[in-house]
Image (cartoon, rainbow, N blue to C red):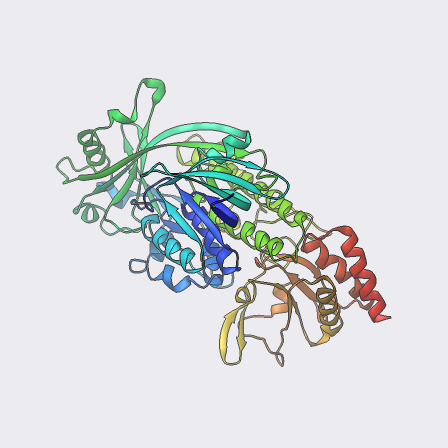
Amino acid sequence: MYDVNIPVLIVGAGPVGLSTALFSGRHGIRTMVLEKRDSTSLLPRAPGLQARTLELFRAAGIHADIRALEMGDSHPYFEGGIIQVNTFAEIDDAVLLESPSLDGPTVSPERVMGCGQDRYEKVLVDKAREFGSDVRFGTRLVEFSQDDEGVTAIAEENATGRRFTIRAGYLVGADGANSAVRRHLGVERVGRGTVFNALSIYFKAPELEVVLKGRKFILCYANVNNTLMGLSRLHGCDPYLAAPLYHPELGEKPEDFTDERCVEIVRTAAGVPDLAVEIVDKVPWQGAQLVAERFRTGRVFLAGDAAHLHPPAGGFGANTGIHDAHNLAWKLAAVLHGWAGDELLNTFDAERRAVGSAMAAQAMVRNRIRHGYGTDQDRAEMVDDIIITLGYRYASSAITSTTGGPVLSPQLELLGEPGTRAPHVWLERGGEVISTIDLFWDSFVLLTDEAGTPWAQAAERAAAELGVPLRVHRVGARSELRPKDRDWAKAYGIAPGGAVLVRPDAFVAWRAEGPDAAGADALAGVLARAAGLAPVAAAAAVAAVAATVG
């Protein structure tokens, strides 16, 4: 009846769809990816990869492949911040607009890097296929329907017109801002809508680097006809990327921007009338703030721009989408492998929609401030980039917490609290130096010390009763894992005999700040909740563990 049977069907082979396939494959789940384009991106879009994104690629085992794409050392460009000039020729008079924190040795084992989407997408395709994904370019989704058991989709090959039927357990719509999957579901979006229109101009200008005097920056704004045009070269200088605004309300259209006009725009921004400029490509786009009202509809999920759209200020778009992909992939794998319940999939919407909404709001704040119409309230609400990329907090049924807190706190607070990314601490294990972040991927992890044996035993009993994968690691001066750079217990907010339960995605699910013999049996309920298991199963596990102890 079906031409293809697959656990997960993914629509869209951009960074988000390919990352979903890659992460799913690394968790042992086969996927099929449909992409209507004939190939990966040919342009260096989304050129900044955040530290958290690189942590995910590190965990998936492709860190070296991605790092090999970096052209020289791109980190000094990020350290240069975001600047503004009248023209690029006046670079000596540049004004620093923002100097965001993006990484740090006590925050992450990774550093941000510049790399164009045209390069890293190729690696993602190759690795996704290596891990078992069937990636098909030149193939579009025609229609789909779902029932209680799965999703049935019809796809069509662009070149031949041949149609085939796919049966999948789940479908992921990672098909961008104009998502056909979202439209088919009838999911509405809320937000400010389109706030500006822009044109990405990719161009070559060999002498521009001389004009810029080698100044390093994330983004440099220049004045073009009383509007700001941003220039980026994080991905390298061939080509450069400039993004002038245009105004449909004044009758301007993308097609009005001929190559000749674009050359003049670049020359005006440069302040060099005879600058040699070659236009490589032009892509119109809209800066918008829109978030889907739900990220899950039955067996269909939305991720990346299909779920949340915001202006590029901050460079959160592709990175946030890749984080969506990871959050969803490990949960789908857990359910498909049979050790997690459907409720765990609901937490994708609860966790990622809150984060997507907060990031969209922060992108809007940055957009207003950079273009000169930010308010005092905007400046007060703006938080540092590192909080948005690494310091966000989840709140869902899978997180056991008595404190809570906002999605984005005013200050970076990676203190081991439930719902936050587990703190990074350098450890020594058998002569090898690793990060605590390297401990988390395919199972839950309980971290404790030698005094935390009751927690360790309770966690192992609960995991065995529930059938949930879990590893216990003891950390301390005489343990298997020995801290190298700082006190790990202090970093995780616990005292001797305390314990922390960390999810496969490196987020803290639960924490006991110290020993509690009476509370150890409750770990069965905590672990069941973290795995999205039904209350009946959780209660049975708690009773079984308590009976074992008795």
